[in-house]
Image (cartoon, rainbow over all chains, first blue to last red):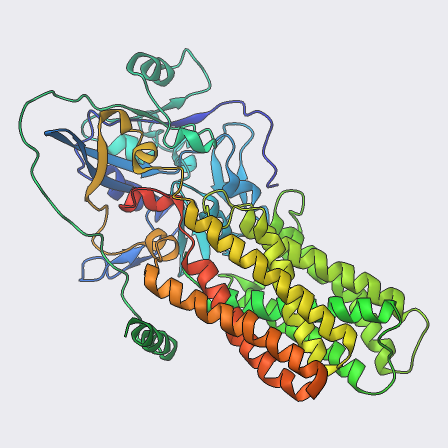
Length: 249
Length: 304
């Protein structure tokens, strides 16, 4: 069912401490490693060690520079599904493959009924969903639903793979619907916030702000471009390249 | 947004097919179009053919076309599902009508024409709402969007009707709906040009209180799905030139040719239909290429 549950028993989610994250990508690689063998496995992985790697990742680590006057700070910024309370990625799904669990609020895609229309990825403002071209279905963070309730693994491992892997303890997992939980207390104490709160999807995952040292040093000037998608060289591409040139002249 | 050729073909072909079906149904209901002779049934076949071509094209856009039946289940919440349900439901009266016209006649065909016309209008409205309901894309999340889809479907379908079953009714249908589409589209372009976007990279990262945010290191060395699908960008001067192409080929020249055709005969409608085909594909390509997605705030866009 793609209509949303009115309430969820728990609001399981992650709390990410931007003050502790060092941008090592251990959470991303650990996520890929677990999820390529878990729920919705495998995750496509093309040319992983070559010049043009591509594939589905459920967790991506950005690094931003935050500039304020002469001071700037690097903030490493893990980004994955925020398991929103009111996610349009669920309601737009035509098949019911995309759903929010009533028991714990986890947003999942059923890999057996997804038709790969990609509409859910269009509805997500966080860019959290990635289409798997090999499987023809959408992939997303499962909050490691196949770990957290898994009684066949040791109890200390029953947390999402990203949380287990983080060497600096920048990631915590828990019930954000329970104000007395450890994660809720930490969010309360540190002024945890929502990403793009203005959008109104009510993310469950919270971020803890980085501290900002007030040092009077000039910021370095770095100009970097995002990579550009390559052309596939097909006849249609060539036709459009010709139109492009004709219009440019 | 990445302009997928299958979706452009789907929305333009099925749009023209539903527009043609709409006018044919309305014309038949009001007694202006009769089933006698071959041309009416051929026209109905063209409408159903374009619709089917479009729907097949949209199915090929899916990663798992063999599971497409599941898409009819979530009509309570999903505009895409609603579109599928109404599209299939429209085949019932339209198909019966087609059979009755093909094998003799029947007094119920005007009623079937009415049902088919309603189905056609609702289907195209649902197509428009798939885009208009997405708050992540400000160029799509506008009340004008479904009406532009409807006006363009009616305009391109009206042109086909004027070519295949020439009459004053067909010429007026094409003139009025293409004219309305031109007004709506010009207003739409003015609207999106005036809207810089209300979300910023600072809001997306929640770091605005610390300063301005810019990307230092991307999460990966090559573009990922989100960047390829949602990060497509068209240069501003290209977009402006293509808008002129669309205005000329889709609106100005066909409107002029319909007017000529009212005096000089149906032959003027041949170039009008061909020009409108180029124009509507250009318009639809731009609809995608000019659309900016909020997720790109994480990939270096300052506003969206």
